[in-house]
Length: 112
Image (cartoon, rainbow, N blue to C red; front, top):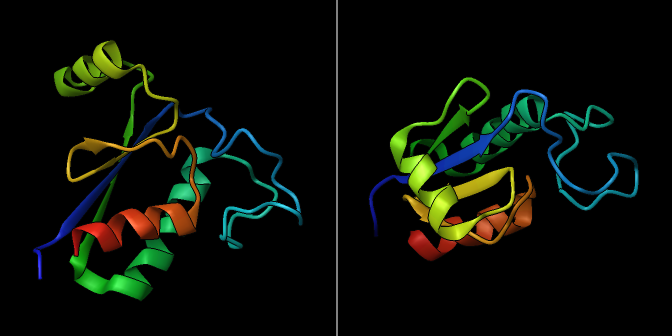
């Protein structure tokens, strides 16, 4: 079994959590942030749900880049052009590009 899985979500304070509408038909798998559509709210809900499921085996971090990005984030953006919000799993860029519970859990399971 691996150690702690580190999930980092990178975006802007005003970012939406997904390119899809936040309504009763959404497919993100989260409900505590319903109708918000905001990255920060969705991150809080994601963190809560993942903590309930995985406990201390998963660590989540939100990196907002409105006022500048850390060097490692700038390098990733220049190299990979990932969608925002960007989801990193143990530093690896994923192709998720939105806050969605099932896809993030699938990435966590690969690491555990």
